[in-house]
Image (cartoon, rainbow, N blue to C red):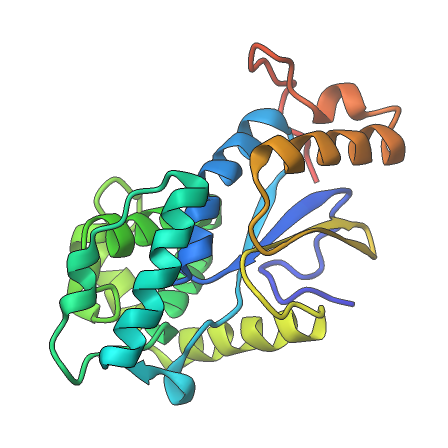
Length: 240
């Protein structure tokens, strides 16, 4: 199956594909695991947005939704150690838990600076969950672009374009075609072969050893280049 990511004609020898949503609490919990993944493997990580509650399926932040989210946030915090600013649950009546714009923002960054996509995804999650920044509004994005080598004006204009909205919804459709039903999900793409590495939250203590074994079993000749040493030394980036 073909992934809906940039440069679809490029040949990928091996890559991780991370599928999530910037407003998915378990994706925020998974953020340290992704950091460990990057420290451990010399394998590119591409980002696809899955669409948690975008547009037509967005829900109002009423009492039921507040209680539902508070429960999940507490679970994620206890499991992952990630910090949550619960003031975010006190937004005024009428605010909708609409994840469409943040997903479009991720796709926009991917369009303008693909290498920055994963870091920007992480920035959005931290902004929403730990800093109580409303990432469902366009006005939030100029401050969130600090430290990223993109034009603020170009980004904001593209963020509001039909092309980027369409690209985000194409991601959602591709994720469904790949069988993804929850977030975070981590896949391994090895040429035309796809392997499920993690469905839902999996701690680094389980996921990293499992992926090491997978690389050693499936790429025994190049494993030395694909797995970083214990002290963090990695070979030169693998060119695809």
